[in-house]
Image (tube, rainbow, N blue to C red; front, side, top):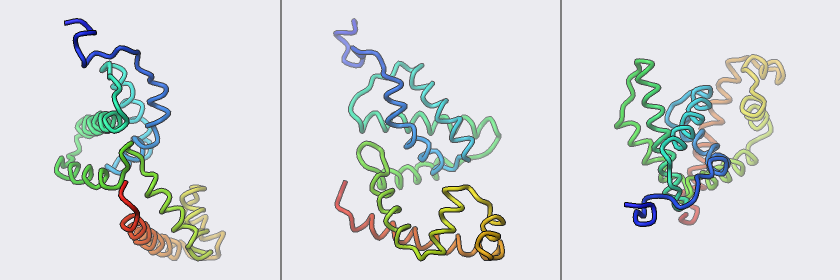
Length: 181
């Protein structure tokens, strides 16, 4: 069967740079959501796109493409966990996939959740917003934040925990009240 006869064979070359540009951040977030550490997610994103290129992937619509890339990323995480001799529950991964699918748009992006998160962060009181900025945007340690805000590290830990809970509730409220994707 020739490429023309087989609908599965692509007629145009894979635009790996374009795929990487459109899906890299989402794949990284997905891997972090599944439990990969930051450095692991960085490496796994690269491995994912290399595997996509090696597989001679035929790009279809955005939904199918995003789903295929997530599947490859998930497999890359499972391979890494096996190499590390760490057990990973596929049941937990399936549950995480279900949550991810419910939270994302058709193209696999978390744009709705990220918009809701931005709105929720803006609604925080000044001190809580400053702690979030220092910790998540600037990467400051609890000790450094405590020194800047004249707090104890344990107080920073408590404030971060409470703020994350407030943000989670706020994002869930906004996401549940949003129109269907």
